[in-house]
Every structure is written in C-alpha cells, then in structure tokens.
Image 1 (cartoon, rainbow, N blue to C red):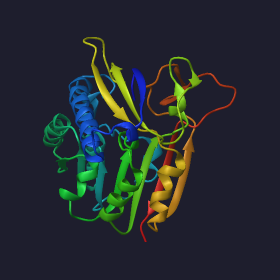
Image 2: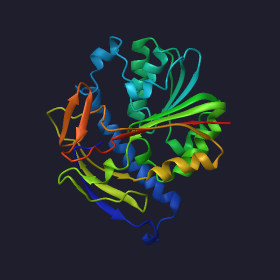
Image 3: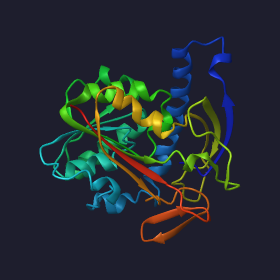
Length: 287
C-alpha cells in the first residue's frame, strides 16, 4: 500500500553471508522501522480519520463485515492490526479481541486509543511468526486484512500459526488485496511483476498511502508476492475447510495511483477493457 516505491529483486540463495533467520531479522527490522515511521503519519491523516473513529465510526468494510456477524462473546485474534482501529471496531461489536503488530509505536498508539474508546482489547507487540511465544489461548476467529501476507515470506508458516490458535470449528477470515493487482507497475499500468513468490522485493519507499501534505516519509521495506494457490493450499493441507472464497472487482480504499471511485467507497484501478479483481476473501474453518 504505497504511493511510490522502487523494486529490486533479491535472490535469497545468492546471499551466502546470512542464514535464513538472519535474513528474516534484517527484513523484519527494516519493516518495523518503516511502520514505526508510518504510524506517526497515519495517526494524523485524513485517511484514518481518527476524529470520527473516536466518535464511534466502525472502520471495518462491508467485504469483511459479511463474515463477521454475531461476535458477542467470541474470541478474536487480529493479526497485524496497525494502531488498532479494526481491533477496537471488533470489540465494539462484542468480541473479546487480542491484536498483534510488529510496530511498537503502533501498539503503543493502539493501547491509547483502546483506553480512549473504553474498549478492552489486548494489544501485543510481536512479529507474526512469533505470535505463539506471546499468545497461548485459542480463538473462535483469526482475522487478517488488507496488507498482511505481503509482509510474510512463508504462508505455510503463517498457516501453522493460525491453525494452532484456532479452536475446533474456529474460522480464519482473511480479506486481502488480490495478487493480480500487485503484478502491475502503478506508474505505467503495465504488468511488470511476478504473480507468485519467487524472491523478496526490496523497495525504496517515498510517501505512504495515507500521507497528508507535509514532510515526505522515506524508507526501505521488504515484501513478498504470493499467488492464490500459495495463499490457500497451506490451510487446505492442514485439513482446514475452505468455507468461502470471494473476489471483488474494487478496493474499499483509494490507495493506488490511477484509481477512480465508481461507487461510494468503491475504487477501481486503471482503465482496462475488462475488470480485474482487486480484493479476495478466504474463510477457512478448522475441523
């Protein structure tokens, strides 16, 4: 979710000086620093509109709300929560929420918003792969949305973590940007990037999708592309049932160049003869 970025392919197998754990630490530390800096900008942004949120606005979208009904008393784990708007919205809907994020600034801000809103969300600072070291309870729902999987190199590892945290009969609900969308170069509107996970992308970033006018945020990040097969099969191989799969031909957020609003709150990228999927939703149920 970037306004400007410059991508460089990195082949992990050619990096003989670092083992896999060292590489991940490097990538995650860089991403944490960037998201710490983003948090300062995002909290003050019109995009997140904290004034209306503090007054009671639900930050969740119709896409995910269709699958987040009857939450009263349900235990929900929200993975990669940023500074907690969606987590607090889930709590306002009656859920008992635990939420995690890699950014210490985001978690600190989330705890302040939690107090201001009078909700009782448990916010935990951790990268996603280490959730099991900080969160031991089981949940009725694990929820992830809009910019989670691109920060993780190994979806099989994610599926192991999700499966371990779900109760029998519990559900994973994941609403995410479609991998087809991320094959495009948003400056040229041409397909310029791979569809599946072949390597890590190093990006020099200018700005952020929520940036207001003012000091331009700059930094470096590391991210990964995943195909729909790569995003779904790890859960199926763990015996989870795919109970819903949806594709949406719009984004609920105006965060990419060349987007236009076709209906209120529905944004479409590019000018193509046929629509392209912008968002997908998976619901997996643990046996």
